[in-house]
Amino acid sequence: MKRSPLVVIFTTVFVDLLGFGIVIPVLPFYAEGTQFNATPRTVGLLFASYSVMQLLFSPVLGRLSDKYGRRPVLLISIIGTGIGFLILGFATTLWMLFVGRILDGISGGNISTAQAYIADITSKEDRAKGMGLLGAAFGLGFIFGPAIGGILSRWGIHVPFLFAAGLCFANAILLYFTLPETVTPDHPARVSAAGGRGLSQLINSLRQPRIGFILTIYFLFIVAFSIMTTVFSLYTMFRFGYDAHHNGYLFAYVGLIAVIIQGVLIGRLVKRFGELALVIVGALFFAGSLFAVPFVGPNTGGLLALLVGGGIFSLGNSLSTPALNSLASKSVGAADQGGVMGVMQSAGSLARAVGPSIAAVLIHSTIPYVGADGKPHHMSDHSLFVTFWTGSVIMFLAFLLAVYFRRVHAPKYSETDAVAAA
Image 1 (cartoon, rainbow, N blue to C red):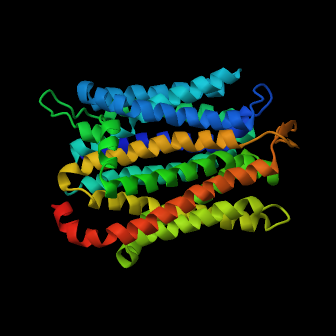
Image 2: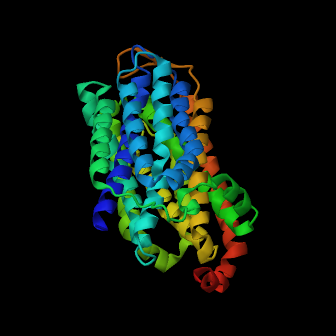
Image 3: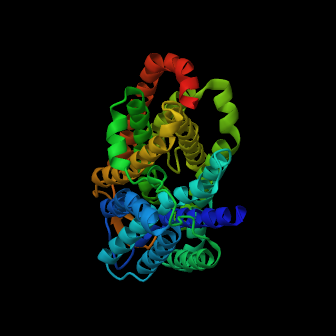
């Protein structure tokens, strides 16, 4: 009975992230296609609209799950995600694309509810293992989603969205018949696990210098990574002539590296070098790759250089993100663990809205090129450099903050770890 609900929750989160992964390589080509004629800036806004809605509605869904139960909130949100994908797949106008992405973002805020469910059914000893399922679902969704999206696009650029909708409805049926409710009438509301006080927790935590540094560095990482994911497909389409199929494999490659590092190597690396060292090295790698990748083209390094650059993207992010979460956990006592991790998620959601918005502003339409649909589009080489280099500057700032943080606060961790663990 304890394993079956975890399997259903894992499947729910995996389908959410699978759908998100499917969108990454396909949406730029879909939106720029025949009847939509969206500009690169509009593509960035489409990505941002999802994250903005997720930021706003994640605590709302958490509060609703406290009041009405986890099961109905998860069920309705999964169905909502499926409807959002259907709208994308059958869209005939640009505003329908925005409606689909907004609805998907609203219902995609159910991650906090899934976390609350895991907190309900696991003991303190097994809590980390249960929460680790969510991390595995994230990584696997990012691996398989882009690849599936790219492959299915061969049968029609809208087909990946219809496939994602079918997965959502199948998942809803599985959840309806197999997932028991955990919020009984005498169940205490798990506000922290549900993320219901995300904004106030964020403000209060930022007043603590150590938490403020960690949140800021984490926010900068996610902003830079979101800029990269927003512009990467446009870059490969413009520079290499790649379509959604090619980009699906590229993003799957990036996700595979992330799963290997975060799922296999990160524990050993933390024991040997410590979290702060990994954050510093990861930030430097990420900044360097963002600076160098726009130089890569068919005649300047080719596919091999592109794979190296994408690998360093993933390496830098995968070294730093789990290390930052570990540092955040060590900075507070046991009573505040749920709160500070909820704050980290709120900062990540906000960053996923800010990053695509920055990319949308920086991408200018000045130089025509022929897109995958055979029609003329516009983008400039200059705007690609500016967009990637903005992400590089953001990551270099994170690197400097991490170095300063290590000099000022690292000695205090050895003195306070025992207190925090208590």
